[in-house]
Length: 225
Figure (tube, rainbow, N blue to C red):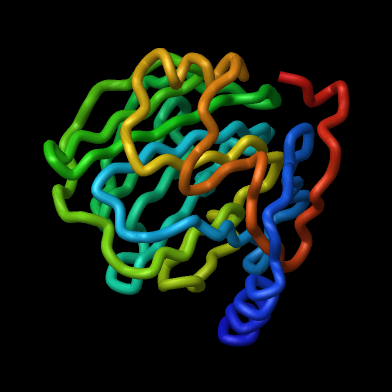
């Protein structure tokens, strides 16, 4: 089944063209071991990364927010919401860096950013524009063809999904840059205030394909930021 899902995703990718998803969301309405969206980056091989997105969920269990895998590292760069309130895991090169006592809300939009750069190995999370502490992770460059997925955590390159870690809720405004955003740039993202879109993933010109029970829909008034 995994091989079939990967084949269908690759086939759809060949036909995908960038779409402007401004004002739209990905809705994951049910727990699943298959439903996901594969995001197509403009290139691979990264010495620095910033990923920002917004999510809305009522679940308190573990669930993945963003999963980038390379051929050699299933958790090349991962944003993972822990069941422990206020705890976020940022994984780099399969190394889990745990951040505690961060702002956390259910049934409300949360803006999350994670940054990493290989020169120092420093990783930092940002929740609703508030920074977490800086901690050290791998200094190895993220090499190899990346597969980027939202909705599922990859335990292998493009697969190995676990329903118990799947995302259930609404995701929007997924951006990725190949450099570390400054405080001011992250603040502009959080406030949706004329920020520079991601140069690796850009929600306003996103190439993607969805598999399974994922709905692309307009953001309705009750889901305004």
